[in-house]
Amino acid sequence: MRPNALTPFRVLWRRRSLERGCRWTRAELQHHQQRQLAALRAFAMERSPFYRRFHAGKEQQPLEHLPILTKATLMENFDDLVTDRAIRLPDVEAFLNRNNGPDLFRGRYVVLSTSGSTGLRGVFLFSTEEWITALAGITRPMSWAGLTGGLRKPPRSAMIASTTPWHYSARVSASLATRLLPALRLDAAEPLESMVRRLNEWQPEVLAAYPSVLRQLAEEQIAGRLRIRLRSVATSAEVLTEEIRRRVRQAWGLKVFDTYGATEYAPIAAECAHGRKHLFEDGAVIEIVDDRGRAVPPGGCGDRVLLTIFGRWTQPLIRYEISDMLRPIAGECECGRSFQLIESIEGRVEDVLLFPRRDGSREPVSAHPNLFHQVLETVPAAGWQVRQDEEGLFVALAGLRDVSVCEPLTRSLQQMLQDQGALVPPIRVRAVDALERGATGKAPLIVSRLKKSYAHS
Image (tube, rainbow, N blue to C red; front, side, top):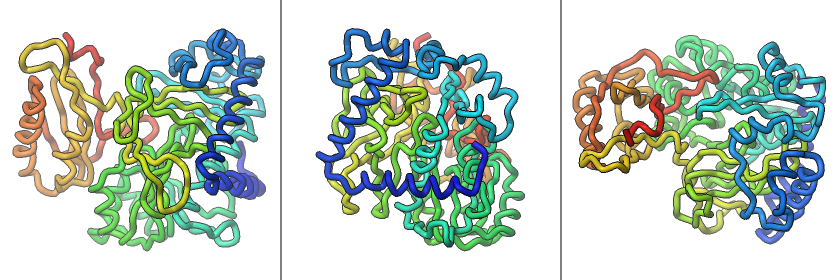
């Protein structure tokens, strides 16, 4: 959707409407969910040949008894799942391949795509009205962070994310790019020196960046090369660690407002002024489940998230699976919102590295991302990344200030894996100029280039 002067006003009006949900009691929220869910299921059954097959005989069953929709199933049945019967996946993909700007598919639809980091690319459509709602949702955390200047005096901001045209952050930026909202947009893959120079010239009040970039910028601010005075710092798209929070406090005296989302639904959760993460349950039913699809109780860690998104009439997503591991918690927040609280976002199931067992038994050792965080977070570097391949583990340390840590760090990692019962592979720890980034500019902390069957062989 091409930016125009009215878009920010429409987004702000829609956001105010959405914020009514923050004042609902839990009972009112659940009533809203039930009404929205009934409308979505009825519409999908009427307009989508796929859902008529997929939910056949289950029309009266509760949501948790419906089958799970994976990305693979979505893409295999794309043409039958969408409710505009004129849409065909080859046409959408051809549009993505040739379009480098904010044009709409067939003049009606915003098209987004995932990078395929979990092994399969996803394609997602939004009508213009659905996209306005999505923009309103993605800007909600700004008001939670206390940035309530509105359009009369919007803060001067800088966003560092992907500029790939089909990526969510790039389309959000393009849709809101008007003179009413002064913003500098930088690609996360831009060299650090160039970022620092442009930020010093722009002097933003608000900074939004991937955690991996934010960590480097905090180091630059502490060193005195970056010289910006911020009112607010926000991050999303990667795991935010306590060490990055600490460095931001040291650099700017601010806490980081973390937002968690996905291309399919953003934001899924955000932090309030009290630093607690709330799920945006007024826009979706968000199920945190284990590897067998069973609801995870408060305190447990889920293996999957299932999203049923309200108001997505073009491409209904009902119990759509994303492989993120969330930990729900019980209790209420001081902010008064009735949305479900989550303690942490543990990463993706794909971030769990598998290793053969030292005793030769068939079941592999699963090394949770937190194990690597515990060893690597205090390393005197601007960023780290663990990559698993056929040769073992490669640990990249960007901006390393003391190369003498590499050898003891190798031993710590070896000991950590031995303590888990793993057959320890060769481990290489090296200083690098920059972390490896994907197509959308993200620098995942943990990357496996092995098939999950590796540890069973």
